Image: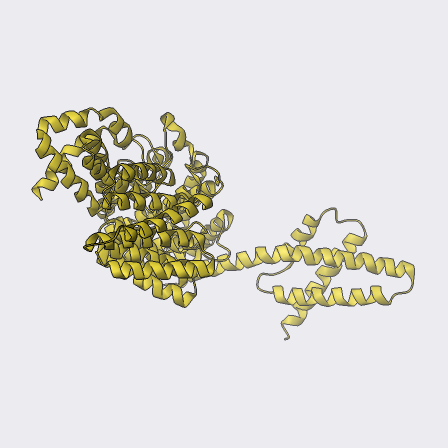
Length: 615
């Protein structure tokens, strides 16, 4: 208490000084008041100042209310107005002081922590999921505080953290104006993270602009579509400066891209589709770095920490993809098996809503990869967590995904059961997107069950197809491309089952086009694979080879086991037509295929068929 008395007097004097200066006309702007408060109030004593200011405001208000003399009342009113200006500016100063306190606290926490914990603490205090994440200016102040602690506490390793922060911010300054320029290079027809390996695309563009050898090396690896894991393994024990620099560069790039894509709401090629892709691309990169360095190392553990931060941030976005599109705009070999790495950081998360949504992604992605048991496990765990968190949209989504996965496992009774529950819940909650998916899954499940049974009446198929058509009509009404593509694809398969190949082709071709627009690569590959089978049924062998080959290649590129189905069809066609006849029909569509999958993709088709034959 004895210490607070002089402090109280100090703040009484400061407030009076500002009020008197205001009354004498010496205050020309509110910014002056802000600066006087910033200079006059000591960090950590804001509560004392606020109490003194509040008492002043109350007592002056009482004077205004009680005073009858007009001159004295006018002066008191002006004083009250000055005090309220101080209150307004104090709120701004308080935010600045809190940020300063936060920076000093972060610097102190990093400095006093054991050496092996400092990197994890730095990532925690700079986590973008915090209510008030540190901005660039505050990060620069943190770097200065850490440098000050190097001199004060003689801890040399803190200098690496300070330099890494400074270099990371400086590198971002160079990259910022080139954030999206790569999208418009060489008249590219699509937007994404691809490009000609080593020449075009974001990583090649950005890599030429930064100086740090470690960051430059990673960008070069990504540009060439080489293994990020092998890159990490080849680095040995890198220093903290390079790691912190890379962390900030990648974090700023990811946030910058997401912010830009989020503003392109009416651009079909960009918008939320590429925001989703950005989150997942960067999560995959960090996952692979963590895998390469090893989860039991300080650097590897830090990489997994960043993965978790990205996924938690992503899970709270309104466009979080509960129903697919996982492979949108990805390209390159670093996609393969990447989703399995994302399971690692989830082992460290409690049962939260975020975890349920992230598990949903892993579940439907594992289904796309043909890992059905793993898919069911993820969806069941997500379902349990979503129910506890009362996240209805996530709960219904996982019922829908379980239905789809059970069809793949030929467990049609469970598929129908889950889709029926999803349909009831979606209608109860008014979740139209979920209702579309439930209708599609229910119709699809019943068609596949009917196919397995003997002596099925035509009416059974008719009812199932009605569900699919109802889902399609609702998806059109909602304007939801992802759901529309699923309904069209399911209708195409249904018509194949009932041996109406001409109808099947119509729906599958439209489904493929919609899947292209929505950016769902997995669904594109499936539609093309089914088109191969449908065209084969119609004896349109050239078209069967064209669509089947594209479907096989795309599904193989995303490591989906489904590529074996079109490969089997193509192998049969090769036997029927002979290798030369088959190759001639394939060559007839060479230009169209090259425009879609490139020369390397076209040349890889015969090798894939041979790989299937050998296995």
